[in-house]
Image 1 (cartoon, rainbow, N blue to C red):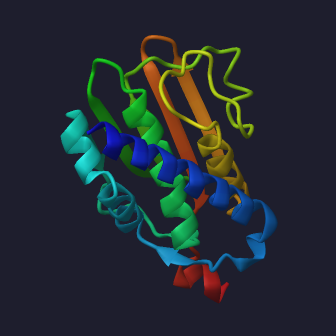
Image 2 (cartoon, helix red, strand yellow; image 1 turned 180 degrees about the horizontal axis):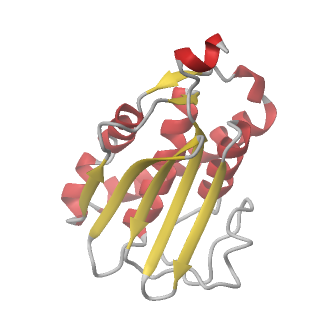
Amino acid sequence: HLLVREERRLTRLVNNLLAYSRVTDVTEVYSFEAFDPAMLITEAVQGFRRQLTDSEVRLDVDVPPNVPAVRADRTAIVLALDNLIDNAIRHSGDTRTVFVRAAAAAEHVRFDVIDQGVGIPANDLPQVRRRFVRGSTARGPGSGLGLAIVSRIAADHGGALEITSEVGQGTTATLIIPKAATECDQES
């Protein structure tokens, strides 16, 4: 189990370094299309099946059927969700449930990833989106690249990354991505 866990940690570190390089140097290679938020979440969650079983973390996914499509690069958004889910699992604390939700909001779709773990101190919140920065309560492995990658992907999509947290209560990371244009929008 230790070897598998360390292999996953090293693989994640290398992938994050490569992803950060890719999203900061060649953002023009994004391929924007309309994607169903439920499909993007399902794809991101698939990579965690074994980890969820091994760690006894429960993942609760809620995407109402009326959530509109987003305008996104599939690979980039799945990577962003992957990083948010990984953080939530690793920092989930004693309450071993992570919530992943999507909901429409104005011209955007909000992807919320919620844990009930250690939380991030308020004075760390402005810094944790910077590369190689981890919150002072962060324990265990991590490179400090995940939230920097998510923040960059969100900005490249015309969206944002919002983080709210309370120490000892948990963290909500919200990826905000613009809705895809509808046929009515395209005709006007």
